[in-house]
Image (tube, rainbow, N blue to C red; front, top):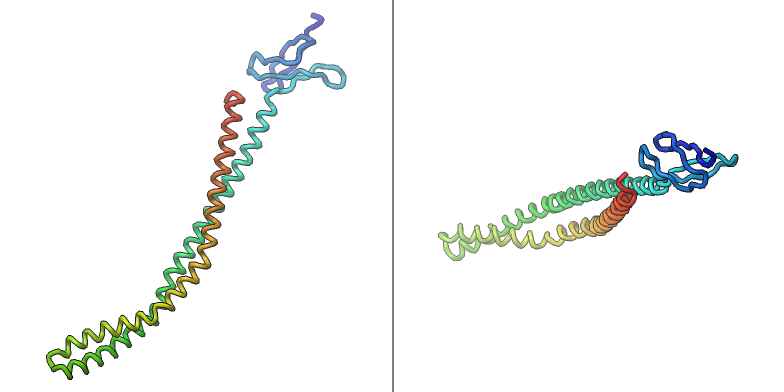
Length: 196
């Protein structure tokens, strides 16, 4: 036959016969859509018509995988920063707390002495009550005097970690949005390509 040429499907390798004037064909074996063109010598050449769609899907998948990795990295950094923040907060009351408890104990002791002295003035039977009251009041006053130091240390920890955690939170949300968009784009490309 003069107007029929033989080509080979680039996807499955099956032989196909097409008319000389054909610009597009479908492989009867794998169903691929082929573009028929001519090489430099004029011989027919079959090229996958879906190749652009497949390339878009592959490129989008690469982007999606990079975004997944970026999200994993951001989540790990945020987890580590949250852990460091929690440890710093745990250490803050303990370091200031030792001094606070010492001052509170001294204040309670002084309060007990003052309470005992007041108890002696009022009457011997009220010494225990005034001593207990002196311990409580002395301890609370000492605690109140030391509390600003503890709060200042805690504030420094929060000022250091707070902005960093908020920035990482924004990065994580942005990475999630971008990953969602890339996944939706890839799903659309796959759907448009016929579910390859």
